[in-house]
Length: 163
Image (cartoon, rainbow, N blue to C red; front, side, top):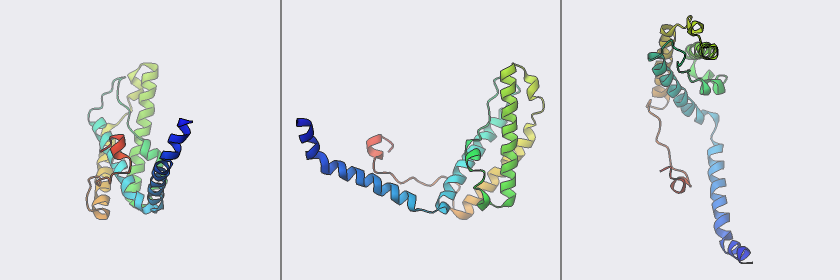
């Protein structure tokens, strides 16, 4: 019975914590999709920068590193706010990166570098540079900075060690 006694004593604290989490959830959810555009562009820009670095050090060996296309795959149908030219560059660059990933996977599977013979890194580097410039320009015009915004701490950041 001590267990239930402790719960009844701490019930206001538990209810308060649940209420704070619920309030924070609804405040974040209330923002429209336009509020998520800068975060999406930041994620895409980080992916483009990472892929540019991978393209710079790309070797035609079996242990070649694959390109990152996760953010692109999840959001490729939501990028109409970027403009037609930038959207086309993004599509071309990430489609090419996905093709190269398939060739790298085949080379690893069959342990032969001949599958990577058609990889044209120069074309990918040019497309990625154009994407990076376009995304940075979009961020400068809409947000005022191409650096990620400072994140406001959440309710449990101190408890979870994220601050």
